[in-house]
Length: 245
Image (tube, rainbow, N blue to C red; front, side, top):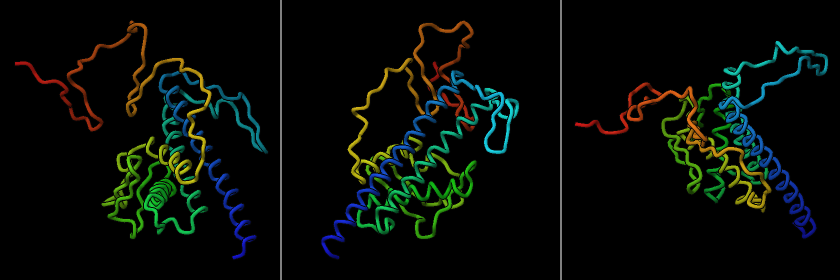
């Protein structure tokens, strides 16, 4: 390959890299919006206004067809967040596939892990988007794909099992993976540190799906609970403090 051809190839790769960086940013934006929408919906602060009539192309729908009840909005917001993670995994996979000849067998283990994790997550959603199921290729089974303290996927025994965030670390692990690919692998200089952002209206902390919000006073209709006993998602009682006596 001559100097001119190498220069042209380099320019093409730079253009492709910028395009993939942009697409990853868009996927991250959708995830960030989905997080905001789900939080607002759960807190019953999300407006649910829809058009009284909406025409698009040759079709027309009315308010009654597309309006959401609050309970329906809560379910939809959860799946909106889920599909946003799917979009990130798909975008990561495509970016690596376009910029590396064969990311599955690359000499850099981080590139291999980023590609395989994003591809396997994408496959789980692609075959069953509402209730994702792991569809692990034979050559990817009984392996661990990991990138530092960002994300890790152990495929041992996952084939055919329902998709669970605990298998790979959760929504934020994929968000971090997208940023890792965009910044560390594709060379994007926009780390987000210089973004101009407004201050939050409320001090809110989330731990998983648990929302902790700072309030000025306890609401009059608040229900007192016994902090010593909680029930986990399987219905098993958990004692958080030792019994006296």
